[in-house]
Image (cartoon, rainbow, N blue to C red; front, side):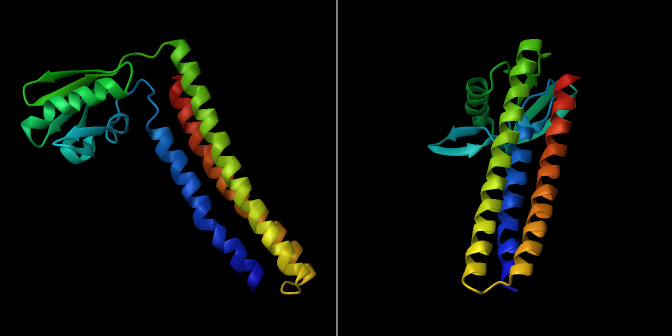
Length: 185
C-alpha cells in the first residue's frame, strides 16, 4: 500500500520535530534550577569543545541552586567561563572542587521574553510539521495521477495524514503548555 508507506515515511521527521521542541524548551530558564540550563554548554578543554555534561556531574542542590562537580580539577575554570559567557543572568561561583550556580528570580520582562521564545519554537516546529504533511500529500496526489494510488485511498490517506499531524501538534502543544505554566509561576 503505497499511500500508507508515504505517510509512515514522514513519521520519523515529525518525531524529530517534537524532540527538537522538547530539547529546546528544556534549555529555556524558568527560574528553577535544572541541569538542562548548563549541560549542553560547550567548554573549550585542551583544544576540544565538549559539553559540560561530559566533563562533570551536575546536581540540583535546591529549587534555585545547581552544583557542578568536574571530573578533573583542571576543568573548573573553563566550565565557569563558558557558563558565564553562554547563559546571561547566571553567575557561577567556584567553591572548592565544585561550581555553584544560583538561579535568580525572573523579572516580568524576562518572563515575557522567554514566553515569546517558547511561542517561536512552537511556531517553527508546527511549520516543519506542515511542510512534511504538504510533501506527503503532494506525493500522494502525484501517485494518484500516475494511477499508483486509487482515488478512494487518496482521500483516506488525507484523513490519516491529518490525524498524524494532529497527534504531533498535540504533543507540541502539551510541551509548550507545560513550559508556559513553568514560566508563569
